[in-house]
Image (cartoon, rainbow, N blue to C red; front, side, top):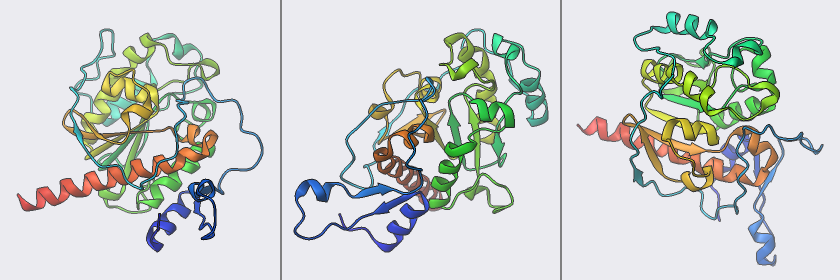
Length: 283
């Protein structure tokens, strides 16, 4: 594949480098096109159990072809916290004081979410890890740095000071607001009870597009137990909002070759937003 200079620059921001193989190289060498530079050579730590670990063959093309795939939006599960009608301050206070499940006994603090409250992009992850539990912010540490690089590659930011334009801002939240002990998988009852908070956050943000990162985010939003690898590459919908499935950044740090697929997912999301904007402008 021939990459343009713009594509190369964006991939480098994301932590990817495109190698040009010699003309006489064997096909197997030509297939190894992407190498990672952002991750140290030291062995990665054992992955938390709640992150997706589906391994796939690297893609051939840069962008998958969008295909509409509507899926009925879920309603709050039985036992979910009732957050209907809460505004942002009340919702934040309700999350901070929540004792609906046993996770409230072991958390350091809740992880509400971060970003622009009217952002056009909303990113939904899985459950807070140890660093998130200590900081109170989602996606910190190495996975957070990779996510920031991914967002920067398509002109987005989680930091309000970078740009006042909500079209270039994101709001980031997790399916759970408390860390499961030892980063174990979220339990179905925990996801169900916490779901009302996430539903209300989506209602308040009113995003133009949602990125669901990791298997538990997918399960919560799409009511699907299919692997991330089977659901990515096409457009789903949540309450009429386009939704793109992609890998969790922590998984990408362990499976470097999948960064190219994550790049495809970002491109698909960007194309979807641009297409929706162009359609709205013609109406």
